[in-house]
Image (cartoon, rainbow, N blue to C red; front, side):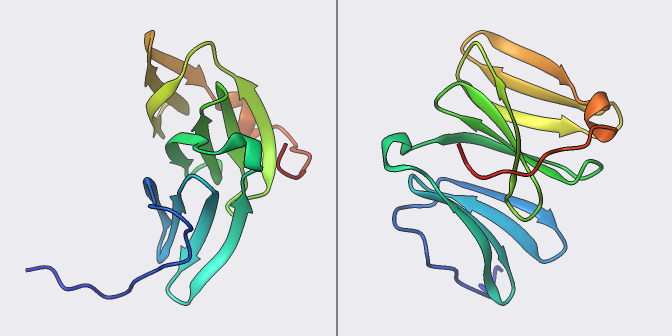
Length: 135
């Protein structure tokens, strides 16, 4: 059967999203924050502005690009470093409820109100990102 190894409890509300990133590191989101964890505990976090609660509707990790991608309730896709520094914001025309990265094609597939969409991320591999804070 299953044996619980660890418990992580710093979220203010129920964690609605969880995503493994790489060995021993994972990401979780609740209505108030996005947090990066390893075996020792919390490594980094983003606290959402009070006027933007219940923000993240889907998460993906693009290992080849080493970026975390969030789909958010304000109809944006945001790219973060693996330490949760905001890199870039893209706008969507619909709410995204699910997404996944296809590493062999370097595309992000999203699903939402209008069906599925494919986002080509091949140019992101060569782009130099300006690191900034959360908008």
